[in-house]
Image (cartoon, rainbow, N blue to C red):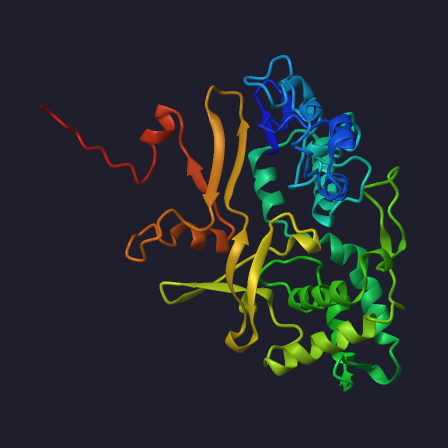
Length: 379
């Protein structure tokens, strides 16, 4: 559980404040079963020999009960210029102040970062360097919809596409596919997952296929380096055997579904609420998109037609010198599951339009709400 907090005095905090069994690396090394010797290093899941008394979990000073870690053992970062975590390791919460020394059960150290973490570190570090941040800056970041995978690879993909002999590539079914139309679309793509972005859907579908046919350790020319974790790996291997196949299959898939290669993303990534199509901005975590969207693909129904996993409760909070916080929030899937409720899709519509709800904490803010209704109750 990654927790990040800040206050109006400029202090920041990151911590993994959670209840975890007190499995130290030493205990796991001494007491793991044969299976546990594989699972613990790989995923932090410990499987211990329960028949041995010397393999008990023990206790930490400060722990509320025996058998769990105390607060002092939890990864914690205080008063860094920024703190960021995109459901990843605590190690790179701040790239200038890496966290180390914690047990494997809390996460990894020195291992390859996901593209979403890499992109977030770049963006948040740049904001911290600029300084003078406002809530509006945070709102813009949420809906920037930048695609780090696109920044790293789309240019190389477009050039390799244009270099294919005759503008064709062979699909996984052995058929030749004219992919020439995809080259220009990828070159012109703005590298975002905005609803109006043309080429976003093409790259998204291509990237998913490429990851399926090219092993992760063969995807990049420059490998991961623990001394440069935010910028590595990089430089796409466009000569990988699966590259033209992934491109051919993507083009064939979209054409077979009647979807133009340069279709605006929002025309093909949407949800239907109250009979109305609502374009959905954002993209998959595998692309590195901050505004993460994991949609359901249904080519026959027109593309990505539902979103089962996404950015959920959004907050942009700051202070303007007064005692009242400035807060903008959004519950992307809306508050009610009752289709007859006015709150069944209201915030989903706001999300579609990249708009926010003004949260009102202080009396003066509440009283100036245009939707305020006062009901006086008397005995």
